[in-house]
Length: 214
Image (tube, rainbow, N blue to C red; front, side):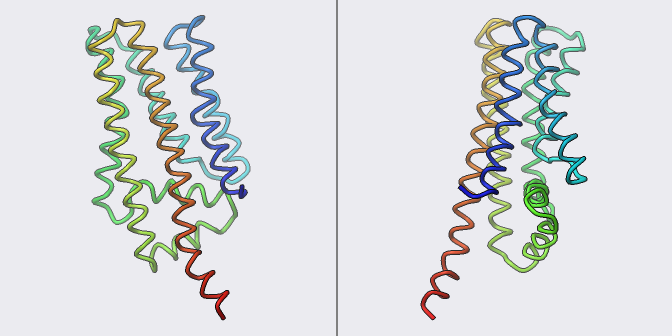
């Protein structure tokens, strides 16, 4: 396993597994609001470490933390039960729509997520990524495809969690909704890891074959 892959797995551990575990442990004692705060602590710690060492914030952590923060705002308000249960899943739906709308821009959201990851792997790699973006249409297509997948995935997660709010009681819906959230984030993160590795293999493969034939 390569070092970049290890870092991707570390990002998955910090952004998905640790928040899910923290939520699970804290939910029985502190309730939904306390559990959400607990799930945010690994993200905040990782972002502080990332900023101290690399002088930038991890983009994926920021997206997940934004979802947690908006969920806390919903819980802090006191609307009717339907609004409370329905508006929290809508957070991820809004983020998913933003991913899809960013496809209309010159550089979609996944571009900035990828750039953030590369700058952690090695200083200066983000500048190489900028140059590659300008010269390789295949990279542009790949980033746009990943943005579309994340957008559709987050909207699908939103719809699944909305369905849970109508099908289950408050307690069960809250717990199931949380696990659905982290399952979707985890699935999208793992898909991104494998898609990136396959993309690199496809790009490196032809040049490697050409070199070996000389």
